[in-house]
Image (cartoon, helix red, strand yellow):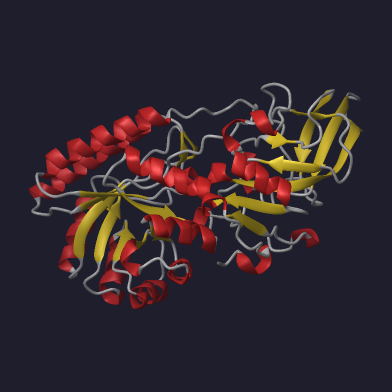
Length: 418
């Protein structure tokens, strides 16, 4: 846990720990990522209730685990694939190709052709060069143009690399039509872990302006892709304070914006969304252990505690630069606590919370080998992992099954591929 107060027990650890996830963490032996499929399914169903009729295409880069893909697929979700490799994995998990699109605007001729051979017919684009490649290697495909946003209000803004300016989008889709492609839609992404409803309002207004321009040019797309950005609920900021994203307000803004876009369009208009971390982050956690709680002297002579964990930036906690994770210390429900710097086990100075992070209160009695639960790690803990840096192998994972039925434990070195 961060600096917001004392370290909690499992019963009061906030939104990052459900009963089923706690039971799964308590049941495993050794370091392991635990994913709660029932919780992921429930988050998916809640999203569908909030945005009825919106087709969900899971951004699988957030959690490329076959059991997760299969569970979401059984509920009706599709996949936002960023490469042919992701598409192949999703097919292996039972997701039909009709529920997939290639959402990456950065793709080689070879990858376009490979995805087309797999049966994908919906592609994101944001440049004339990409449109020309799609026309050559995915003839007749449907394309949707990604419109850039500022990324303001998000923990990760996703600026610059993706999307074209609103004024350029009509020309991109005109060129697609001229090349024999179907100009099927528009898309945006408000930034990963978006925290403000205003970002959605701005993005939807931007889409409205582009849609008006397209209608004037005789192009009537049939879909709007609202992208990703919906937040997880269990993170702490770098100072250790809960982020508390106003999710209900975001949904209200999105519903209102969808209605406005339908009025502008004047005909049938479908909506797609690409949630990633929103579906999985709070329903996964890492069972790690204490390497050492050590006392060290700073250059000014002041005593400081350091808590070294068996997982860190290169093995499950890649996003530790931008946030803090809630920690639970089973067996240590009472104090005293000491403020500590959190760090991973590798021989690398980046594998630690920076000076911008608040110190983390941890039990003074911690000993090497004690278990630690790191919460809200269901997104990117599997995918953002070095494969053996400093000799630390990737964490294996285990799923608790749909509605509590256990999955077979999987070795992360192989099972992370499905």
